[in-house]
Image (cartoon, rainbow, N blue to C red):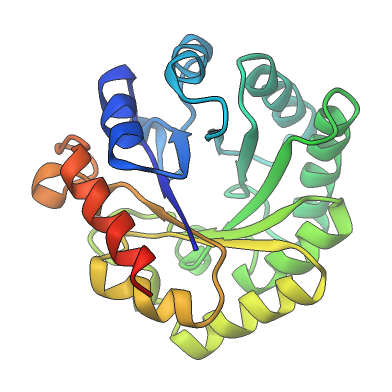
Length: 237
């Protein structure tokens, strides 16, 4: 299982890299769960990240605007992202989500075939009116995406396991793997959540809060020691 850490700036990215993060995920929590950061921040973090380490960029908690999202995806690609995440926040059903993702995939794959495109839903989709999280694997497959992901939309202290139990998450992982795609799971995860996710075959685990001093994704700062502890824990499974 790979460790994805989400820094917001140069300083935090250095901490994530030095701590051993497998994927450096550039985001901006001020703009939401999968809030988008600025192109120059992505460019800077790509420059300082070892070539063999993937740099991820979130496009935001996007609306049902396929053209706008496709242009944002190209911006992330041009800024150096190897791994592009789309938070399907404003898509209410399978058809809307599929339309957004198919156009993102076309925009990205026409330019750089090996870029990883991630369709991300929300475990607490019912709280914001977005697409059913259990439809994300099929949306990923049918759109030509590479990875199906779940996070939480509302960051109020509740996490992934407050909305989906381990058996449901295993079904999500198993269905995604049946399509020969990979999975990522996130959502205010704690150390004790990692082993169960590894046991069900999750490919990537996404963390910010637990990698921050004080454990707060908004007011805390990522520190290499916390990242290193998480990486060591995952390696022990």
